[in-house]
Image 1 (cartoon, rainbow, N blue to C red):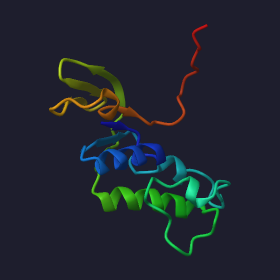
Image 2: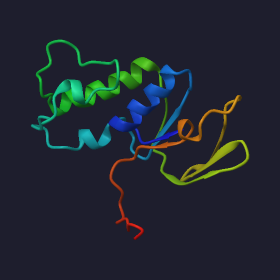
Image 3: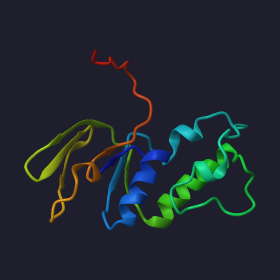
Length: 142
């Protein structure tokens, strides 16, 4: 289970997929890389191509060193499409809790139960929160 279909979420799902772990990617937006798509249309990234691509998946030749917004969006969406990632878009995750052998994901559209793989894999490889900026302020524990 990966929460968030942006750059971090898709990269996480691809890394899991590369290790034989199928991951369901859930996002409240109706498309992959929706936050990138919402940026102004003349945006050019200030981070070079090799530093913003999922491991082992370089940008195609011919792209500028600093990709445009459209190139970044298509790069992320293309990897999700080409890898055949399972996407559940338009679904907001309200709560995530771990039970005995499974995760329960409460969404605005109902509950999803994700069973842990046998033999057990590390918990971090089962639920990844890659939803970007939060909508509320976090307080640090001092």
